[in-house]
Length: 203
Length: 65
Ligand SMILES: [Zn+2]
Image (spheres, each protein chain N blue to C red):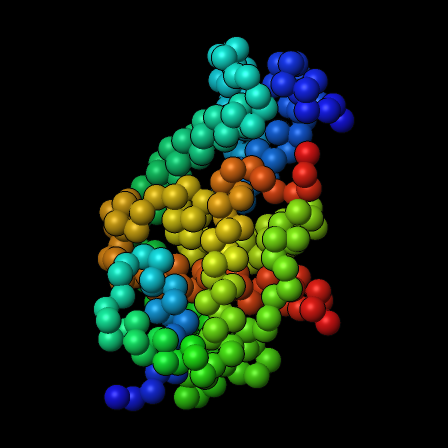
């Protein structure tokens, strides 16, 4: 692609960079929405909004940061609207469900220590993994493997950076419930990443 | 004081991103992770998850462009 000086001189929204930014935006949106139709609409809207007023941007990275901020706000609005449609009590009920508890409990033995198969191993060079497209495909898969209500809370917390109090209020659940759901999200995501990515790397 | 198990340690390691742990919690966690490789790795992995989600927020997923 173009070198650094050419990039700085040309507008940040030339066709090649838009294609690339659009790809990253779709990944960002799909992971949060699980509805590729809605994700596509939102990316399109954000791109249009950004291009309408993108004149003031000197470099591509500022442009990208800004366009992702637009997208993030659109997704937060969307999640807020849809979160109101599911009742908080339903969420709490399912979070405490026996089947699911058993699912995550299976990682530990009766005394609460890691089962030898599930004990976290050393991960070689995560930074290098971040640079690979294949890693993000696995990350995407692992997010999608989480139960939906768990993924929703985790998404609000880590990908949209809302704080726990705000998420609880939004979903009508207690702080403690929020903590438990986030803990399960991390347990599940970590386990999946180790099995599908890092394990193969180390061995 | 009863020795903390891995299940409780993992939960506290997650909760420390959400709230300030008490001194007692921090101490038991430190004692446990000092002796437990699994939990010591778990703590590092949660940091990796944090870094990964920060990258996602900034759209920095994939090779250098
Ligand atoms: Zn342990």
